[in-house]
Image (tube, rainbow, N blue to C red; front, side):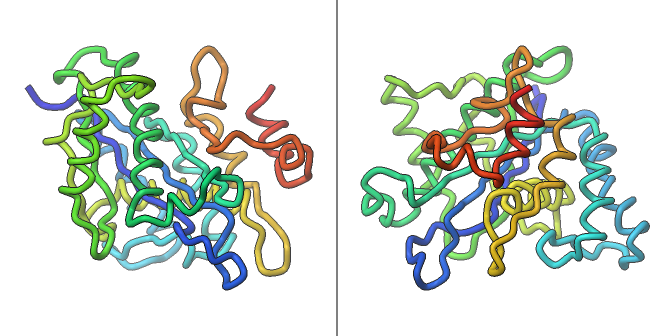
Length: 258
């Protein structure tokens, strides 16, 4: 049988730790989950937004390249679409033993582990009819990265047990691949979701954040019994009280902690 779901994964920020040289504090990895049976109809929202913005057909929409007033209609269309999103927000300065995560791809792989957990929970709990209940995972292609290494990492996790909470009946090594955003409208949606949460937490060079996009996405952020944190929004490591109490996280308190 075919997979029931498709999950598109993209990122914003980077994995670097050279903060004094311009590396951002935050790294965001996001997933956009659709039902495979209606995937094409869902991701065609990108075509609609291109028309609204007067962009040429087939031209990829890169969130960071759009102006604020162009991002708003894209986020608005995502917020009313038949999909669910999850985002892992990594605050790199708060990581314990950061030197560990300087190893090749290790931070990225750890982030994938946490994101895969949440994707698998959502898919497990919303199987319904059609397909075998599993998810096809499509990554935005990263230059120089061999996705066979990610598959090997997942296989190690599968055999480890312990506190790994990925539902392996949903996430399968042979259903993971990568493509360029220009070939996948779903990846352009995942890029917009990652960018939306990135701008909500990462200050600009002038010291400002923009949380409007994150607020707008609430209707499609994965939640369980009304709880968003730990499900559709996962902070790693957990936010300190000092970070949480600042104005930068008013969007989190007001929209996702009601």
